[in-house]
Length: 129
Image 1 (cartoon, one colour):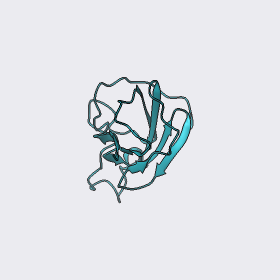
Image 2 (cartoon, rainbow, N blue to C red):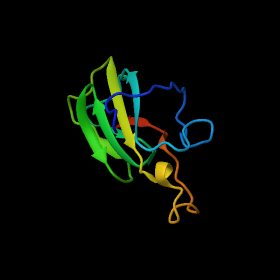
Image 3 (cartoon, rainbow, N blue to C red):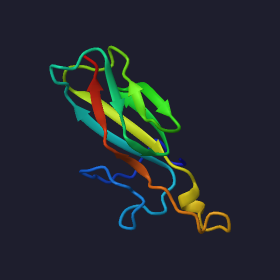
Image 4 (cartoon, rainbow, N blue to C red):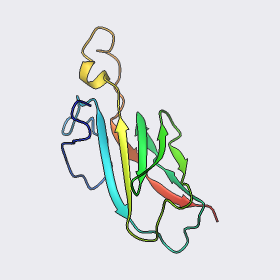
């Protein structure tokens, strides 16, 4: 949070638990995910975004506009009409976890199982016909 909105970048091809030993097991803070996508012809004005599993809070931007925020599941959001374009959409998802990873070596948390970190998914952009 001290360097927000500047981020250290790692590029991953799939959504994974970032708390695994090979990645960021002691990370506490904000993780930003960014992707671009086009819509298929079937998408109507009644679209939704389902982020699947997320640990912990989430903020979502679509094409630069704040689309949603949630602090707990389900991470399922209706998308306001007009936010999506046929081509060149940008989706930004910021996930903020707790301080447990950074400060977990205390007498209260040391023996507690730790939750995953980040956006695990699956991420689905759907529509109602």
